Image (tube, rainbow, N blue to C red; front, side):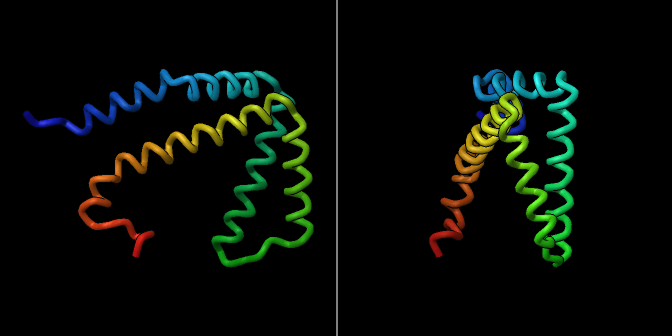
Length: 118
């Protein structure tokens, strides 16, 4: 009997949506979206992060001032209770996704070996 991997992937996506980790993430996300100040703070922080990443990808080093500004904004968003919880939950969700990625790629590692082991 043949297994349709796409069907299994959709089942996994459904399970992920129903997971406690995702439900908590969704709740914190909604709280931030409904708080104009928190939303603006987070949007500004993420835009600054994106700008710095793009600069680094283009081979440019961020200035001391830009790094200092990013650190100040990070400290500010960390002090906001809901944003802090959202970011913590995003990290937990990232760990879950990383774990799933490891599981999904196991057959390829068995076939080709793990590049980290070489």
